[in-house]
Amino acid sequence: AQTVTQSQPEMSVQEAETVTLSCTYDTSENNYYLFWYKQPPSRQMILVIRQEAYKQQNATENRFSVNFQKAAKSFSLKISDSQLGDTAMYFCAFMKPSTGANSKLTFGKGITLSVRP
Amino acid sequence: KAGVTQTPRYLIKTRGQQVTLSCSPISGHRSVSWYQQTPGQGLQFLFEYFSETQRNKGNFPGRFSGRQFSNSRSEMNVSTLELGDSALYLCASSLFGEELFFGEGSRLTVL
Image 1 (spheres, one colour):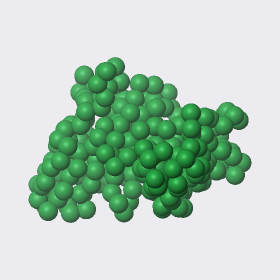
Image 2 (cartoon, one colour; image 1 turned 30 degrees about the vertical axis):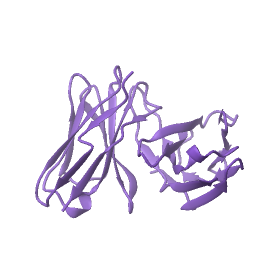
Image 3 (tube, rainbow over the protein chains, first blue to last red; image 1 turned 45 degrees about the horizontal axis):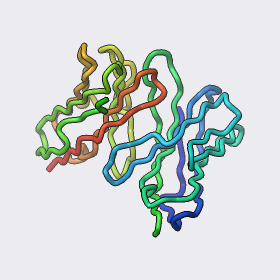
Image 4 (cartoon, helix red, strand yellow; image 1 turned 135 degrees about the horizontal axis):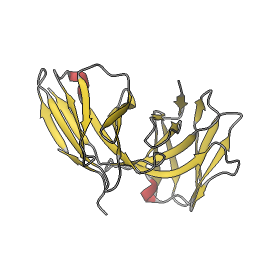
């Protein structure tokens, strides 16, 4: 079974600064996906970024980038130039892929990020 | 393109009652999965459906059940409600399996 650990329950960052959210996971699989999801106070979960385990290059999406360390089973999210709209709960998640259908997402406990004006 | 739609958004039930929640996936998506979100347990996987077949099931008691219809819409049912079933129930749909699109959820309160 897979586990995902987010050890920091809360973080705060000043607007325009950079913040890094930590995530570690445990799995015996070699091929898998890792995700960061954002859940703003309105509650709808939104995909922020995705990383395929077979890719060595770290994924980036505009101001969001990851530091994927497969051997260390670490998957951190860096948010650059933080904006007030980044205030949300962030979940790290693991998926073992299967053909033709969703696979089960295993989520971490989440971290509440507050961006201060 | 409409997103994932969940109904009802809010509902209040009493212990022992049953509840049915509905999820309409994004048009063309055949995979639907359900998650329970609580402050204590976080996000937990309930079940996954693909083309009307349950492909995966989480570690929940038999009181939790679901189904998927031929138009990919899905329902989940919880019977004999307990206080601990109070939660936000999230539905997600997917086209190819890796990227899930979530609905806004159904907030269930059990009194």
